[in-house]
Image (cartoon, rainbow, N blue to C red; front, side, top):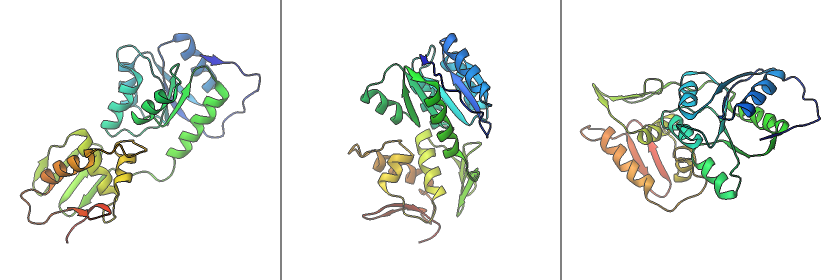
Length: 240
């Protein structure tokens, strides 16, 4: 539900391409029209399956996703995108506005959470912030450390002459480590950037995944690449 505002909104100086995933046709039509009126491009998907396909194949600046959707709920859409390496900022809209609901949405991979009813002016401001946060230099699409290679676009990982099969979370973990090759990566950094936790759940989930990843990328090779830095975290580097 969108609350009307009597304040005229200025035209945006920078065009954004948005995807609205919303099953309520009246609300969706309002949002598409409102975003277009201030100078943005807005597409619409009416259910979770359609939204996932469009978000996965389109180059969007921000996704605006209703939480309760037919076929696939909004949190499932976001989680699937994140597991596939899609980092497009996602703002969740939901009538479920309690603190626990918002936390669940953010942990699922959402970048912001706006309870219904909301004012379009606030939604616009939040979307603009997410779009600016996404800006900056383009990210690398591939990483190489020694004879280990990772390609973000094809989701291919190989070491030496052999291709490695990684689970989605293992891929995200390796991607983050390789992005910061030669640097110490702490548990907190991994929790926030790979698991989207903004607190330590006091589990051994990181240790388990590091162990599995090490077995896949280092086992059978003379030179290990994944190192545990005692008391600090982990590092991926070539040599030593």
